[in-house]
Picture (tube, rainbow, N blue to C red):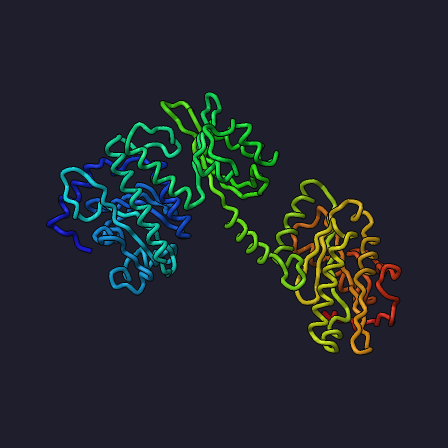
Length: 508
């Protein structure tokens, strides 16, 4: 959008009157852009101030530059709007379709919403264009709901109030300094932040390094399941809400923040005063005055709901939906981890490839429902008490895998396989007809000579091939010359038919 010569000079003068351009990033502004990014679920949020020939970011989330040319700025358009400018798909908007931010191959800016910032200032007209915007953006098309737009407008009002307060007070009040009630602007800001805390489940905290006194905002008390008190628990009392291993981890963060000025961001489970378990996130850093560390300050959020969704998605991504066992992707991750541990600690590890025999006959004769029941029964038996210390997964179809790492199981691997072979035998009966399903196992031990997961898998696969060539329903350890046979005393039925010898080619 072209500059308006009738108002641009006055708008620029108003912007410069706040003395905010090219100042350091400040926590108050970062807290609001962090809230905008989190609550609107977008990758980018920023406080953008539009200068003569550039837009400069007082605060930014998801961006790695401090400024861009005004010519490519969406905010240079949005600051002329009365309330909010929304672009759902910039590739379809003639104003922005050719914008290099939109046409970029990586990290293209596709959707946008920006609310003009018009903080009041003495001597300037109230109907001037904004000095910038509070904006959010995404790298894909999206629609912003009315509730999200209203939230963005509320947060923009907070930014305007902070800019005005900053101009009056010199610099914005520290986010965690909730005790500075002397100034009217500070009280107003704290009320606004309190509303945002309740809405987002976020609170603020401060730890004085001189006496380790702890200050909590009201929402932090609420997250801990405590009534709002005159004083927060002491530091050791606050740490008592966490498990011992998490307390040790947090103390490490605190030490590095004080000694090395490292900010921290961690998640942990918290046991509330009323016995509930909540997942919380704490973000903090050290506050320095005249080169001296005086306190730790930060924000605190209950993320139980989003963490639960993420855990559900994670389990879904790494779990076989039919059997409930880990899937191939989960196995591949586990195998890499197990090999790293075995190599580092010189610990034993064995991989068992398990292929079902007779499964196709069950599917062909009795249908896929019966086949599914066989697969679920196999999974249940692999989860049994005898194999509780092993990691079992379904690779797909009628192929399973097991990682054995307990030293006594690895030392007696043949006995372990004998037990497993016996427990995996099933008799499937429908309409008076019985089909037998058994398993053939190929095993390989991890050694220092094995350099990759693929090599270990190939060894187990070769052993499986040799076992099938010799006799289905048996097992073979790579490098061994004899088969491991099932323990029929453990089988759920007596052997109903001889195990047929297959052709030399593998049948799975």
